[in-house]
Image (cartoon, rainbow, N blue to C red; front, side, top):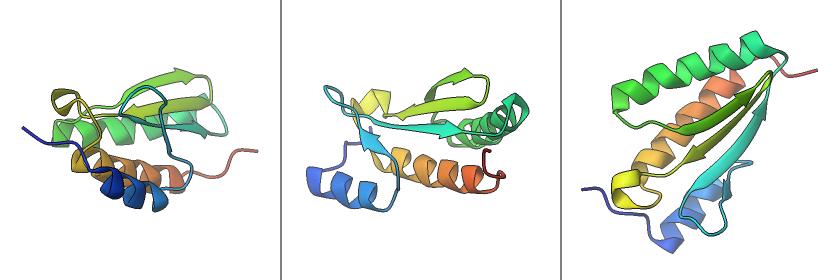
Length: 102
């Protein structure tokens, strides 16, 4: 079983992930992404989904048109772990490959 990050490790990791925020009342991280249109949002989600499946670590997410909201937490650890840090970094990489929203 994976163990949750210490408070210091969590803070240090969040400092390297612009826009990600700790959720109040839950040991989880959250970020909202906005894309040009639905196709771009769906392409982003597809890229992340393929990586998440490879890692057997799946995000919670919500999509409406060009907005994707992502929440990360390792459920079997009841908190944020290194697995979430790695997936958040990949998500940032995937988002950076998309042209900016208008």
